[in-house]
Length: 95
Image (cartoon, rainbow, N blue to C red):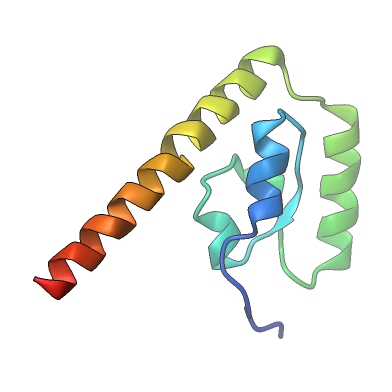
């Protein structure tokens, strides 16, 4: 059994922001992004990874899917918004 050792990978968000198709393991940090089920592979399951890779290569993202994913990432993981929220947390903590 694999144990999760990292948080949300920035490289995943970067790939999605460029409209690239992705296939990621189904660890909680990746699941947090909310991709369609076919974009997740069961962690440690080689057969599932093989099947999902084949599907990914055969079914490219449509322009509509690319646009939707881009907007989701831009809204949910916007660095300006995240930094403002972080500052608010720090300000509350010191007041």
